[in-house]
Image (tube, rainbow, N blue to C red; front, top):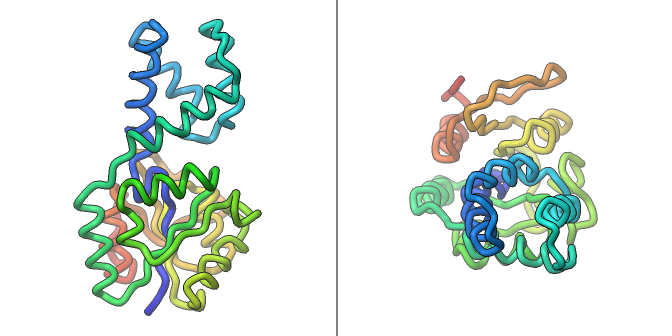
Length: 220
């Protein structure tokens, strides 16, 4: 039974959609124009911007009296509230499990928020376990976090695949460990010259199909 090591945000779950839903609601609540949503999305940078830096940027733009702590809490709770598990993704995970794979989540981010999202969406019913960087004390692309994931389910890394949307955190880690990988391109071009994924896919379902097919399904 080989391991399938999966990213969470914008891989198993659509973080971008959740952030947009929260952002639209937040802007309406503070009376900001709806078109500012694109500014908010750009500042967030797909979650790569620190939550604290994002909170400071929002405070400065809208002259809010709320503390950065309150804004960070609102963001975390908003993402938990608005994140949904696609039933087709759940079905694909069940198929992978039935085919003998063991799916484990490996995610960077705040432990409480990420675990709350996993449980609230019901994703915990479709994966064997998860490792979150804040709780683990190590972040992707450090190979140690993937090793910890394997240890949690008492599995070896041999035969494992890594699936994720981040060139550096997911595919870079796979390359460093000599593991095959699937990059979820989300409409982007591969720009990294130091390493490359075994294959790429336009969606998680296609990505899981590629793993089950041994990497033979290639998507530009």
